Amino acid sequence: MGWAPTTGGTSPSSRKRRTPASPDCGYCIPACPFGVLERREGQAEQPATNGVAQKCTLCYDRLKIGYEPACAQACPTKSIQFGPREELHQRAARRLEQLHDEGRDEARLYLADGSDNGIGGAGAFFLLLDRPSAYRLPENPVVPTRRLKEMWGAAGAAAGLLLAGLVVAALGAGKK
Ligand code: SF4
Image (cartoon, rainbow, N blue to C red; front, side):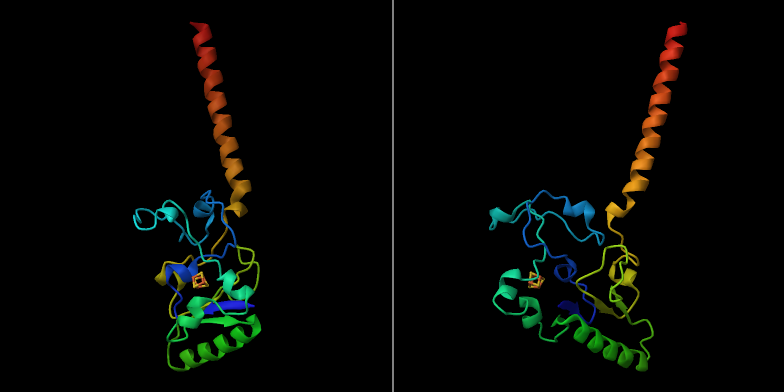
């Protein structure tokens, strides 16, 4: 199954990744390759969700009983669509062709190729009318864990420099 906002798809909720259950640890905030998650603050009328990073659950409770996600059902222009991935791909390809025929040359599909694409594949894809950056979406999203090697390398180099500095300082102090 897939889920595809088909025109723009830029609402924050439509870009949030689904998580069936969240422990509210907040790790998802720095880990989100799209930079869209943040803690919900200052909702006095809803104190239970204060400080919580809320995410799209893909309406898991509705899917379990055979309904489509609420946003797909409620969207008046049917810009958000839900269904079998292949079917959505075919529909999106037809719409894209139509847009190109109308001279909307910048229109493109985003995250639709099904490849690993830096985030291990996506459950949703988008038909954008412009470059992803026009919607403040990364051109090539990458999950931070893919950069762990490079991050640990930089941390190791910094630790090495610090240690070398300490040794030099200790040797300098010993000569006095
Ligand atoms: S209505 Fe459901 S599927 Fe749509 S954004 Fe909200 S939680 Fe996700």
